[in-house]
Length: 217
Image (tube, rainbow, N blue to C red; front, side, top):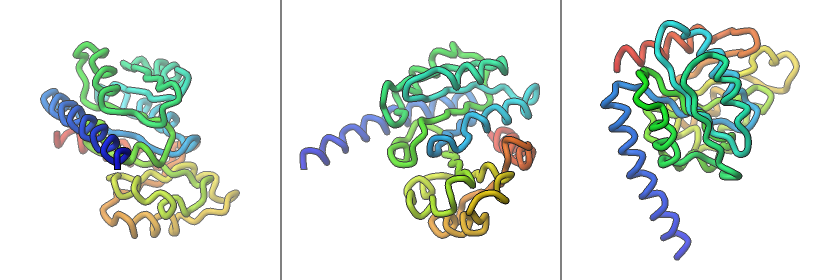
């Protein structure tokens, strides 16, 4: 019972800070997304393609989460957008206080879209609210089509599913129909995009949808 009590207290503190983050983002009219996936699904590649497509259209800032290195932030820095790297030193997920501290480093730079790239993990990040507007889960075709069934909490807590690496479909044992059917059986409200960060297929539709959400804000 003591372990359950400790976990509950940790989550309650995180949720409190997440609510503060959400109010802060809302007061600045920022639309925020929390990108989650298993390692290697293409989160950073998606951020790169998104930044390239939205260049000059909206103001974007990026928070990068990684277990050990700042390699992802260096990649994003090439796009000349504000970026802060969080290194968790082995931690398997980002927490709301880390996002709060990282966001404060932007020093009130004008931002319309905040992209938070979480640590590659489909378990722990499902339970940690960061203050984002939506979670966006990325599943790649190279992972197979049963990810939604193995990690239902993450799919249940997400608003958008991006199926990446569709250019590799001819070479892997994966069915788009099966991925979508499994995901929608868990969360029928999921908005689904099929993309390839390699060929740019589907990126236009994803970015247009993002822009529409920002205009609504």
